[in-house]
Image 1 (cartoon, each protein chain N blue to C red):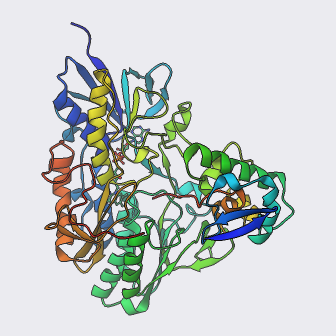
Image 2 (spheres, rainbow over the protein chains, first blue to last red; image 1 turned 90 degrees about the horizontal axis):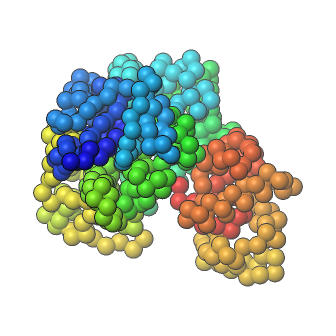
Image 3 (tube, chains in turn purple, blue; image 1 turned 30 degrees about the horizontal axis):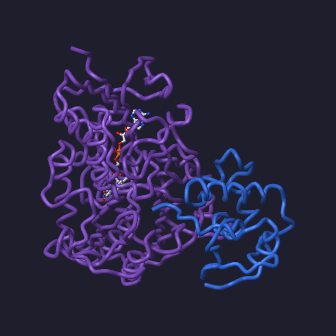
Length: 415
Length: 108
Ligand SMILES: Cc1cc2nc3c(=O)[nH]c(=O)nc-3n(C[C@H](O)[C@H](O)[C@H](O)COP(=O)(O)OP(=O)(O)OC[C@H]3O[C@@H](n4cnc5c(N)ncnc54)[C@H](O)[C@@H]3O)c2cc1C
């Protein structure tokens, strides 16, 4: 009997974990050895970070051990990826160890790069300037919000791409709710500052979200390109010299690929994301390198739902690749997300590479309302955490929710 | 859609002033485009580096680059700050208009 083929997976987050578990079920260990690497053992349910600043989720409720999410027969290496030698099919780890592979899956996500914006890590950082995009930031922001009773709250996205592009909008909606509940909303202005020309990247959804912002008296500054944070005068300074003053700033920093990508020959683009075929999830770098989730440069949102839908196509394609069969080009860019709008409501959007988010219902005529605030969507967002740990990561299918974007139940809109 | 006469040729532009057909563009049109869109002159080698990279990326990848990619590209010798001096008001959009390519898709 021949030796098993070797699959090495970089990153044990959403994508790496679900792919490892699904492939472990599909291939016996004597056909495929699976090794997975991550630099820490804290698997964070990242959508939960949005709720931490408002006291709606506690940090320990949204973190679990990475190893415990992996099925038996998967080898977990708690180690940093230092470099990939794409010509030698070899991964070099932080402690000098190496892993040889037949197939590599890059699932190291996106990292925050606050150091790339002048002044962002200055004196005001973690004092009046915060992010909720990681656990430390979300936790510190919780205290800052508790003490904030008057003044200007500014929510700013420095530049795209970012993970879950609706999360900063949701933050603004929840802040409106939070300050209202505490009876201080009238003493606080909320301003949403974005580099885009509207509230969201896709026009139909952008209009719906834009009018929600208006209803909630959240001011919007569009096409603002943050060049610097002025720590002394507490202001965002645009590259064109315009300023947005704040008392409390919540910033979504620039995102890039994991740092090792830049050390790994032609593995990544200028931002450290890996050039990837939109439909097959095979990298354009080498045929035996596949990519899943935020690490890929495919033109759809960086989101857990995307990672989930991509994952189904990816797993089939890694299996086909191992069997020497042609790949299936079937990922359509499908993304959906619940958008928390405060006061126990949420709305849901659903779209792909070709189709804008449409009004209607998901996944069929009798499903959840799309592009409309409702209580049931809010429950959907809360229920999702349980599905994340018990359905998505272990690789169980949910009936009716597949990788292809459904068209049943949707209105048609001319864009 | 409007028709603009640039360097003696009728060119189709969309409502936001982007070229509908990038193949209609010629370098001779650039001075007129730059003036129209308020690019402070005179045009330098650095402006041209940017315009050439915009077109190269568009034809290779199907969309022009974002400002961050422009700033990090090895083909462009200036960083993000200088890009805003060369093409104030949004380098990616302004340079796309001058380079005769559609509006960069940005990120989703
Ligand atoms: C605040 C917030 C809210 C969000 N809300 C939503 C939402 O409502 N809906 C939704 O669908 N998505 C949401 N997302 C996005 C979602 O969490 C991500 O898109 C998803 O987790 C991507 O999965 P991934 O596997 O690509 O990356 P990740 O899950 O981030 O995993 C990447 C892994 O790689 C590891 N890694 C990186 N570099 C190295 C290295 N050098 N060596 C070893 N390991 C390394 C990291 O430790 C990490 O575990 C949100 C994200 C944030 C931050």
